[in-house]
Image 1 (cartoon, one colour):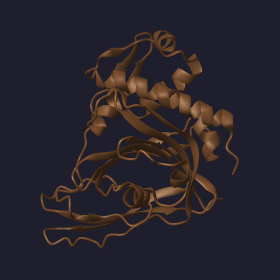
Image 2 (cartoon, rainbow, N blue to C red):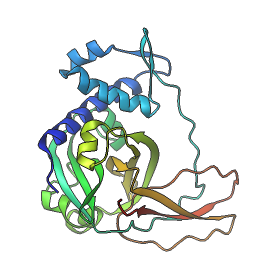
Image 3 (cartoon, helix red, strand yellow):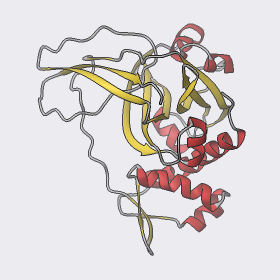
Image 4 (cartoon, rainbow, N blue to C red):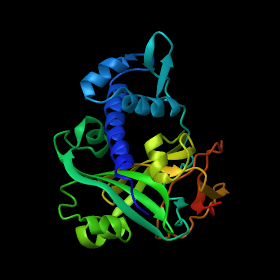
Length: 281
């Protein structure tokens, strides 16, 4: 698959704008206003369409609210419910298909306030930022944005990011042993540039994954958010409810996500989850 440079550039620019607006949101309380589109365009040095695409995504994600004639405001906080009360009671089998990656961007830059908070590091400390297109059997499936402390992987290469399992590279080449991850999944829609990369119509449904991965010493080693196609990717879970829920055997491979749930039991919930790649039309 050939990557359209224009679409790739638009996605990366929108990503930078999105991060800047998220910084504003996290520094405010629900109901607080954020600067106008005109002000943000001037401050961030971007066009109105680029800014609006990022704002539209955050509105669709429920983080911002637009009020006609008044402006944009931080949305009310979302209600989040934990699926698991026992962090040891889960397993994540791999998704199907042959997964490969195409690099869209790979550079070293300061973490910034927002990513720095997640990775528990100084905003001035360097991270490795990676944007890559994930493919299954040659077809585009997801756009990933990864942030990894540069000190942990000083010799990370583009070859590692395009071939093989990244966590295996962390372990075998950089001495970083991942331990666990906390991940959320939300519905969203794709922008025009994202649609071009994923080969779907604009505003098609998608799944937004956000994950913070820590090593066996509880040190953050990766912050990533990814956009998965909603027409070809779904999550299937097997749940064991009750005090004797067994822990499924661990499995290696691509680890797509942990689904939300609404179980009221106070006991542990054992579950396994897997991504299912559906056949195209």
